[in-house]
Image (cartoon, rainbow, N blue to C red; front, side, top):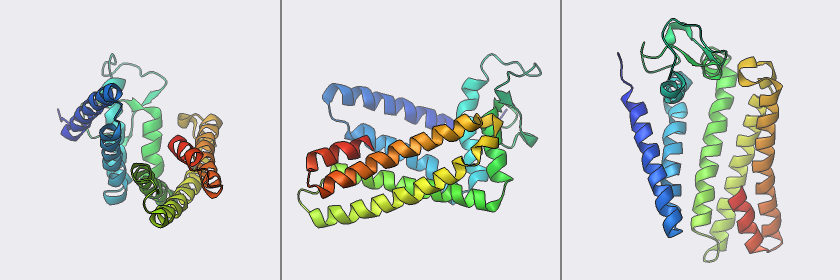
Length: 224
């Protein structure tokens, strides 16, 4: 049976990340933990942009497969939250695991076999939000106390990227109501609320910056 070594590497990376979190909690220095987490996010996200959803989504679904299949015997009736996909194309484990989370099967089908516009919007969402995430951490690491011109410029670029990424997220969420595997209308409400919290805190960050309330500005951007 096939062994997905790249998934095992991700598990090892998560273990390292947890160790860094424990260490950060002890020392009250979190940048190593945050930096390594960003690296994990980049690895997960860039695959969508370089290799495409047809490669990135099976890898993402496969991260869950090991745990989701605990206690499930081949050939028995699947739990309601589990499903199979055509030719087991939504997993990189080969025939080792043929049962997957139903949302993962739907995710794969919608973006691999769906309209090209939907896939393009997904790439826009991932690309813009990834850049915004990296720039936000850069801003927090290097606040504008030494170079306010640079800080303002990067801040405007970051907010622009976040705006485009959020629009793409809401576009995709507007279609979730008809996807039972996602949770239907609850999925739409969940993604809308998440977008509202992320974008709302970013707006408050801009408002406080324009008021010259730099302490509150930093607090709101950390929340974002």
